[in-house]
Length: 253
Length: 272
Image 1 (cartoon, each protein chain N blue to C red):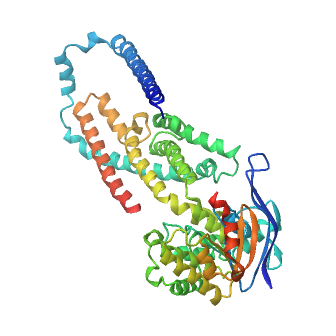
Image 2 (image 1 turned 90 degrees about the horizontal axis):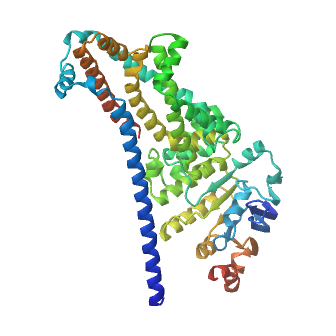
Image 3 (image 1 turned 180 degrees about the vertical axis):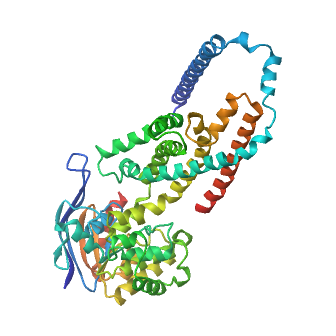
């Protein structure tokens, strides 16, 4: 059963005038409950934009995004916030609050659940703190709980990012180029961790990744984007040399 | 590129340099002329050279200050403390009054770009463009003589600088953590608390400490217009022609400022 159904998604940056640019042009796809779906394509193909439309960090111009049977594009701001708290997001540059501790960063994954007043004073319930400790242990950071986020290495920071997403009890993981700021060995580890966690917590993953090798190694399903158009959608096995050349042909030019 | 074309380009570079050189020469010439005219009108025309007397007389007048009035010292303790506290409370009140001004005047969090933002910016400039002595005069006439007027004057004068620096820090925050807080379902206040505040806090605290440092200096002269502190003692010594007394007050101000300087150094280190 499809968790996420995207239909005819279009995004335009810079208004409708002559300076505007079509970033996504009528993209449709769906993500099933057990999918690890990788979006591949050259830089500027619209991968990040596509992923950010799902939790409406970017507003689409047209199209429908149905998550668990509810249209995200039609939601009120309030409903959208409630929905976002179930969508974990992992970022290319980790997007941690550098001057806060690892613990506070992980706890910030609960912001959608705790009251505003409590969160302003960082008064998270003990259950959340216990959960944060568990999650940090799971990603292998138990020794770094009280460190400041900017004291960690790139790989460790990404693990904090993963822990923060796990705190949300996510029903979908959006992952935006998780390995672009990391070296090849750490990249593999991080991708492996994301895959393990997705299985453990039974969460489907929608992951941007420009590294085709990593994509084919870790994903179960591939979506190929080029210049805002979907030109491939299928299981990893169906992705052949010719299709890849087609997807990345823009880069040669 | 052919040799001829190269020579042409070299010539073009030379010409543009010469032009720039001529332009800067003109600029400095203008400044020199301005300085000369100012010096002539202000110094040569305005100064009462006859009254100045000989060089010896000038030195003698200055020499009257080279003594310390020890008997004054016990009477300085209270005004020194009062000056110090005025600076502390004035800065604190200023920092609190800043908050709405910052909220209005930072482009990325302002409630309205067309009304609140210009108003916030105007308040920042307004606060700074009025001298602390003028603020003190206004508050002395509003709340009467004493340190309350001085505190309010310092607070009003501090708003501009703290608010401007903070608003600019907020406009320059890294948007990435903010995106993350929005993505987990955080509301506006949570974005402010988790995405923006940790990023700007060191700048804000540093600025407040800097302003406090300056406010110690400012509060030392508030008394000249009756707004409390050491200024009043200073003024009294001056009108009594007690020159050693003036020196003593100046030294106590110096001491206070050194203490403030040292304290702010350590406090700044602690918060950043």
